[in-house]
Image (tube, rainbow, N blue to C red; front, side, top):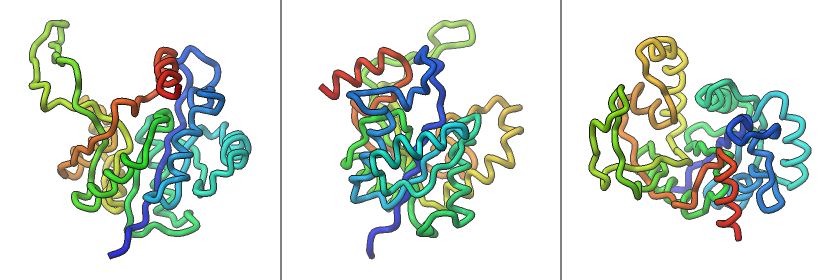
Length: 244
């Protein structure tokens, strides 16, 4: 059996609200390059990933195409598409690109790796571990065991439970799935979105879509403590330290 085709979906449709900046965080500079450059560079150099869909704000498509994809010669970026209001809307728009046959090389029965563009420290080891796990289990997410004790709060702000730390993981990306599985899960999500909102179920990552709507277990795959998401100015300082 040869390697299955792997498409990365890189999400870069966020705003700069928590960064207290007018520039969306994915275009802020880290080590002299736009933050999004790092994830795209990891994809570009990867032996695992064959092509990439980049999801950004509708108003940013022309800028991203010229100033990032063409300027840095990212050849694996097949399509740049507009995202939506919520993370799951953005993922759904990328899945539509695949389903509607808009990729240059169709990915009919391969795997999809969904990654936050604001996580610059994606490595080939993480991508390879995801590939091995998605081949075996059909659904996996990157994460790391937490270092701190975690408390579950009650509604009044008191500590209600202390889960066993050895069983608690902090979830990262990529989150990787068989293409057919994640597409079916997202179709269901779009049909049942209103019901989930009414029931107070917030879908915060792709694994939840598969767990909640498909009833499929999702394998945890080791990432790295450096695989951080840049959401605040302090994160940018941490990232500069990792680069140095």
